[in-house]
Length: 167
Image (cartoon, rainbow, N blue to C red; front, side):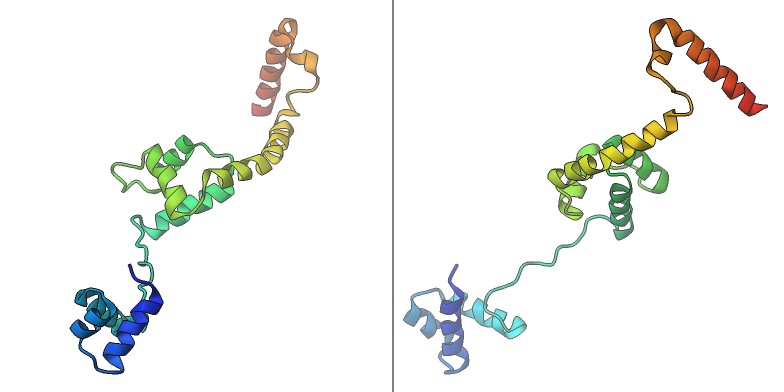
């Protein structure tokens, strides 16, 4: 591959000075096809170095948005949970998405690397632990409550409290 400066020289000789491509190629010591390709690229884009191709997404934008939203909403998710949620939301996916495919989608389509996902999970973990403790506070009052000798009394208490809630 030739540098942009070298390609510009070939294009200027051919375009501005009307020197034939084969002669420009002989002067610069490159193939005539390279000169023609540089000139065609210049005519179509205005540049002599082609830009990167526009990436086409393999999956529907709606699916990618759902996965991205799910990952933001549930930072400590398991891939199996995401698979189950996708099956519920997108039943038209006959084959579903395997765990490796989901990880590939997260990495290359949504641009979320393993490091980013781990950092989000670490940051969200204390909040989720506190939410879990809040849920348990109504049932779990002191450590001895779950000691082996008192475990039956604890479950009897829980059953009694649940039966009172139902009535």
